[in-house]
Length: 381
Image (cartoon, rainbow, N blue to C red; front, top):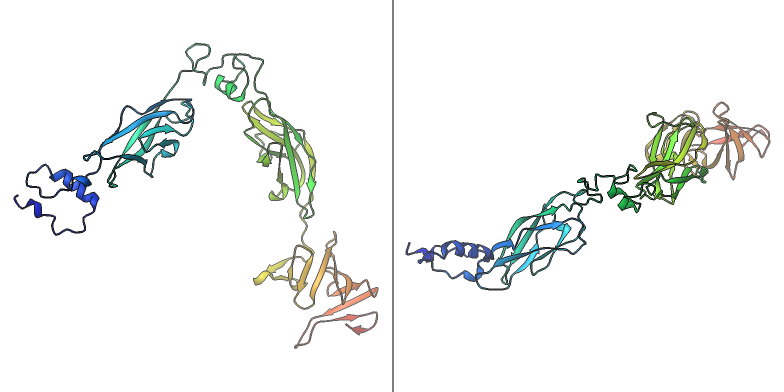
């Protein structure tokens, strides 16, 4: 025991924090030979009173004060510690004052919160702890009937008092209440890429906050929420201008659509519009097999790389501009050929608009390039 002062003499790697903790435990022994008292971390970290707040207080409300003691009577500062806690809902001054950083509602929020607080002295010795902040209910009862406004409907209009106060209508007047939103449904719009847009807007919010909006699609002019062919699709945009791209959904045939929006009173639905989406046509080149590098192998047209602009690169012919015809045929153009027409049933014959006659396409073979035979001039191109 008399050698107690030398037991840590050969441990140079001790941190100041560990020295302080060791001193705090061993210094009560008269044989303790180290004076590490300055490294002892703050003690007795705790709030001065229970941490509790009444609901509905504004941001910055003082929840409580933290205090800790320092063995050397030094200055102590207080800080939040990151972790699995609710620190973000509060602020903590370095003097230990805890304040709210949001407004709490007992009926909508949980009733207790965990915070992690650290006390630090002038030599950066620290101690920390977890503490609970309790949210207290304020009894709000307009008609004093014992039922809180969050659950009560004083004027009997079907809306809870809290909901009416939140939306700015009269919780005591049955004639001032939220109503369904009123909407406008726009005509369909199609852009240069054949993308169809359906849109609408809220004309009146019905004295209720708009919570959601979008476009309703149905197969019949009358819709039912229980019908599997009825689709409530959330729109993109703001309540005064929102919509959807119909190309994002695989609908064909006749579609009825309406704008819709939701507030506390329910779902408002706008006027119905009708649109007919044509069946997707097979591309003029027919069935293809996808190859590496964007190449396609057509059963009749050969290998090519298409582009949405209409241009394509054919493995043997080179660049061609294509203009599809509704019957499945196609007009093709490049400078040497001019405009030529063909289809799967006609290929490798092509009708030449320039010569007003037929061409025949010969594939390149044995290192020779592809050629066209012109029946009109009886020559090869």
